[in-house]
Amino acid sequence: MTRLPLLFLLTLATSVHAQSNFVTRDSAHIFWQPGTVLSLSDFKGDSTDKYKEPHGSSNIKAFAHIVIWSILDVPKKKKDRGRKLEKAYIAPAFDITGSFALTSDATQIAKQQIYFDIAEVWARWGRQQLKSYQETVPGYGIVFSMYATVVRDMKAQQAKMNDDYAKEIFNGKSPDAFTKWRKLIDDKLEETKAWATTPQECFRFISDKPVEEDYEQSPTVMSAIPQ
Image (cartoon, rainbow, N blue to C red):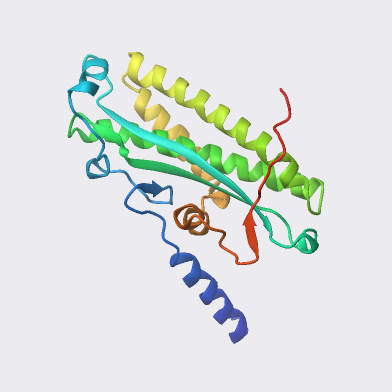
């Protein structure tokens, strides 16, 4: 049996422990993490009559307010920019008070869960894109240059998939639509699990400050490349 050096094991244990200590939800938001399942109690938004008119006659009995958050941090000292690279953080967030349910039907909550998971699918795509650019053009600057473009495209693809999902689930008549979509998204999450949102990314948004002391939020980002 191969014996790993004690120092390596201690370092690994410390890293895993640090990751697990990052907070991934607060009173306002739940950030996507593997195994996170939304429940009725998470939908704390106003569900008074003002919402019942547009939604009451449809198949939509719950609404999850979900946004993919992103931010770009750069080294504070310009002299470090090059030796240290930009850090982009991306994380899907479920807005607790912005989400509401008109029913206690677990099926309706499960349908909203897929929106949360769709956001994670495209958050992972965004990470992959930025990593690919960084590997293609090594060094400082490429993530800064492509960040806004990737974020724009990521959110556009998320919106398109949301629309496709809604048409089949809430407007379509196929009894197998939900099962089909649940499998589709589960398969995509499994295929891309190496790119999952990390606790560190969630904590970046909850704390509203860079995770590393020698970094700051980038004061500017390069505009997205015109389509």
